[in-house]
Image (cartoon, rainbow, N blue to C red; front, side, top):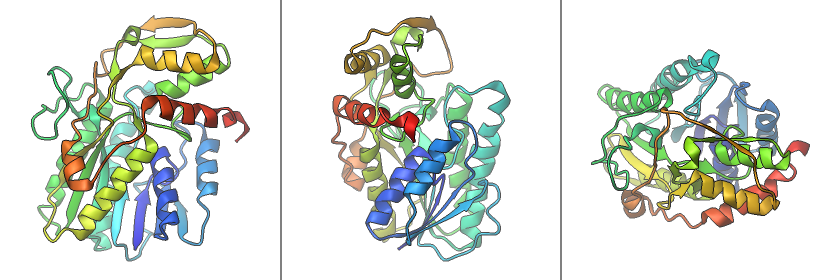
Length: 316
């Protein structure tokens, strides 16, 4: 099977493609290696993917016109991530996430790709209601521009299907973490700061809950989505799935786990933000039933795996 993946040098893209290569899939990847975070980390991920089964194109997602080919499925993981970015980068929510996803859809249309998967986010949900975030019943009220851009992706996917004969799955990821992760995420920042004995910024006193989901579990969920969309006898009309862990943890409790690993108490400063959800908690019943999704890695185990990898991060 031949797979097209955008965001191939990103955190999730890298781990997914590594698994696809291991399964002997043929993969074509696209990534522009922008400088939102450490470019050398993106370069290193790409280098580790070198294989006769992997072809890489260094391109912006809005510049896919020169790529042609026959693909069994296309997966869009490219995006400007994060609910907080520097002001001069906020335009990327529109150019990378919204326009970029439309470019991806046009690429699929041009190349007659009928099976598509794209990354959405837990940030599309409202956190003003009790209980787990459910794909059908929880209101969609993003608190950030990032979350809004992902909700626009979901709406655009539905509009795209009005004029294109395809099956599409959207995956709402919940706080994905692990080795080779994004350096802008809290767990990574905590580890870096503790390692260097720097002051840690703790947003909203560390009282926010996050449904931390280990990268290997997320990759298994994506593989389940690939199997589901490829083998369905019916058209899948932009079906949405949560990929989370169903076990939220407070941010300060996450910090405590990392402190224990380093045997060092962090110095913290408190900041307050309204752009982030108070809680994310995935209802994964649908993904379990239809994708065979079954997250296995606990936060304790996953954080240790990340921190063991992080020891050599600066030597990459």
